[in-house]
Image 1 (cartoon, chains in turn brown, orange):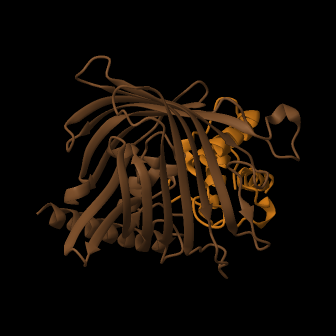
Image 2 (cartoon, each protein chain N blue to C red; image 1 turned 90 degrees about the horizontal axis):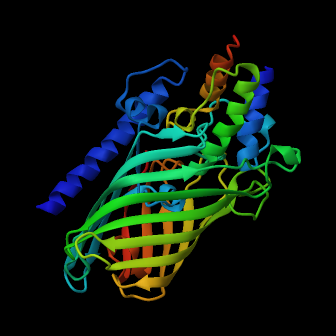
Length: 307
Length: 87
């Protein structure tokens, strides 16, 4: 029954994307239109992604609806990773940004069940400008630090575990090729490769049992590789991704997994040449942070959506 | 024209793309600019500086330039509106 619901949600989302893009293309003369798409996306009133877990690497991934078929064992199941961001608020001359979020991660596989709901607030802080090499030192740093963090309440309905989570990570931005946050481009200007780095602390505490908590020192890198050169500069169809996380357990009374890793590699095909809609194959291995750090190994194929 | 070139330059600097080669109908989050979420914030800081130099009362927010339907032309228009430049 649940699978049927997720199927119809996926179909509805696809129709919304196609309808909206069609409407948008009809009004590309710059005039305002009243399409559903424009209402949803005007001033980023709403965002849909894989996750808003205080990590821009997840924000760069679309929400996903995966269907898995195991012919050998006659098993099938669905996975869903959906996060919705609602508007943004800012402080300190707009350098500190807050936004509320709601997330739902689900996997119906009997041996690897996931069903977690989370709600909270994320923040991003950009205290320093980054500068181009052509600009003066007063304009900023060549490699500028920025921060992201968040507070959330999460309900893992499979493990019946409610946690209060907080985190604070530092990342860096540059436009010098091969430095974090920069883009390595082909001669024609299309993107070949980029990566993002994050480092910081995460704290998870059991909402019901006092002093049962885990604190991790997290190091993460997320890489994108676009192997194919397209004739049309505004289209790119094939993307390879790799995300590697290594967590050092500093205080580990809650999850008791010690130091652990979480590695996700992906292959995405975007039929329209943009990232609004795509088909993805993903292989994950390690200790899944969205599933209470359970040891996980899975391969999934499905639909990616991004607004 | 001056503002248009300035805005395109700033859009290009954030992602290492030559501003003079940027076309008006390109969307920032899509190829070839491929803006990541944090890139929009760094661009907002740069555009804010342009706006405040000419109209200190006004500003530009990240959420105003990161909507999925926004393209380069609409961002140029927004900056012009904020600094009250016609055309």
